[in-house]
Image 1 (cartoon, rainbow, N blue to C red):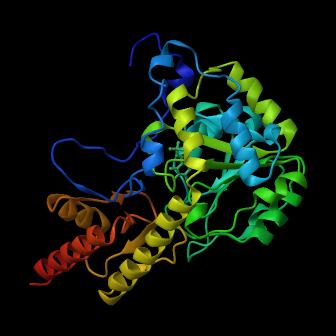
Image 2 (image 1 turned 45 degrees about the vertical axis):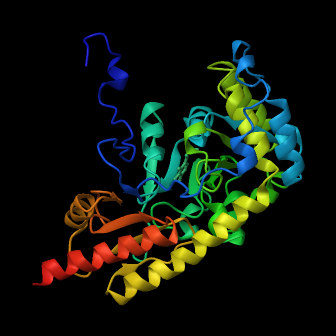
Amino acid sequence: MSQYFDPRYASLEAYVPGEQPRDRAYIKLNTNESPYPPAPSVCKALEGGVIEDLRLYSDPACRRLKEKLAAHYHVDTDQVFLTNGSDDILNFAFMAYGHLGAAFADITYGFYSVFAALHGVDATIIPLKEDFTLDYLDYLGLNKLIVIANPNAPTGIPISFNRIEQIVKANPEGVVVVDEAYVDFGAFSCYSLIDKYDNLLVTRTYSKSRSMAGARLGYAFGSKKIIEDLEKLRYSTNPYNVNSMTLKLGEATIDEDDYYMENCRQIMLTRYDTMQALRELGFDVLPSNANFLFAKSPTIGGGALYAKLRENGILVRHFNKPRISDYLRITIGTKEQMETFISAIKQIHQEVDT
Ligand SMILES: *Cc1c(COP(=O)(O)O)cnc(C)c1O
């Protein structure tokens, strides 16, 4: 750190992304990417002039993609917000609505506490229950910025539409952000509530179910006024935050919804088989509605099992944090990848037992 760095940021602990190593080929089950490529037509979407047009700035209003998303989800275009990955939306939300303080769970997406610290937001951390479910009663009447991932990460546990509505209704003075990064893998979206409540912001991403983590595209649904706030911040930082290639890819993706929904269906089937196989081996596996499982070995600690899997060419995510240090978050890959994963798990447990 230099002597010039603003002391406000000196003690900031940055978010630690999952590793993306290049030293060898790994089976990557550590950052919840899709194991499937984008649809064939999406892979061709940059043909026909998009690259040549890179000399021009991208459309700061992102009009075509906004219109397509609005039509697809039956909302108005001024209820849609677009960013360079959905982490950007969360950043803007903490910037815009954090002055009243923020509340989120102890076990949830690690970026929430980073954004709170970055913007000097006073954070209330609410512990999940013993079984890692969220008690919605803890979130009533807080009247702060509330951030809830549905389904939650890294647990995969969803929260019902009714409970989300109770929380939104009971916090009229604060904005409730529902992070739906994994909603396509079996949770129920609450975005239809944006017409009824002015204080709801629903964030989504192309990174998981849309096989586009590397292109960086996030979107959000909210009331017209909420979107106006966020647009003000976006135009005050980087109006060209979504590049023109990503805009094109995003538009093409919407036309291929069936392809992506079929991929999600396959991932949910593979998730079930993987969960059964792990439970047969004595693992504690949380019920997941996301494209990952959160699981604990009966005999090997989380850090040790992570290291053993890595030696075997398989990457998973381990969080060295209170309550969850014995768990691993395992992204659901292809059927074949998960069979290889289960074989490695069996072999590692045999070695430890003998
Ligand atoms: C992956 C993820 C995101 C954001 O991902 P982007 O790639 O920035 O769109 C947001 N929230 C949760 C809970 C996630 O797991």
